[in-house]
Length: 114
Length: 116
Image (cartoon, rainbow over all chains, first blue to last red; front, side):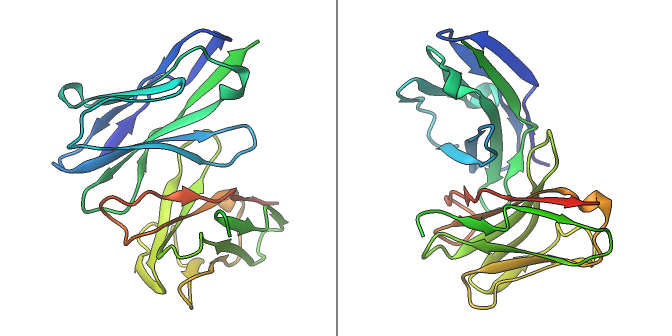
């Protein structure tokens, strides 16, 4: 069975603080893909990143960085120097190599206070 | 178009009425997915198409729900005899290659359905 756990229901920080969103996954597939999506207050789902299970390099994109650790089945997302515009619900999702369904976590609501 | 579009963005209907939700995927995308998202939860898979062929409809809750994609582009999700429990955000996504493997699903803005 596949499962994604985002244990943090809601996080609130003051602008310019760094914040890390946790994602822990379960899968028996040897090849799989992990995703992060952002859902701002306007409601759309915006793709942020895809990580393949065979590529454990961490990735940085501006203020965003992702830490993929197969040993702990985690794919955490860090925002550096957070901004009010980062306020959103962030979803982590998993897809097995031969599957097409995305398995979603429950989401973490991130509140950035000015 | 530039992204996935869905219409209507908001739909309010009375219990027992039929509704049709439309999805226009990114041009050239061969795979199309429907999800349903309840408030405070992640999306839940409903069904999936490769071109015009419905590959999997196992996520459709019951036989009141159906979907089609007759020409391999625009898709319609139809809910017959709506019930209050059908109220949710209905999301459509498309991807550029056959589902499975390395495809990334890009989502539309969703249709917020409210059944009174």
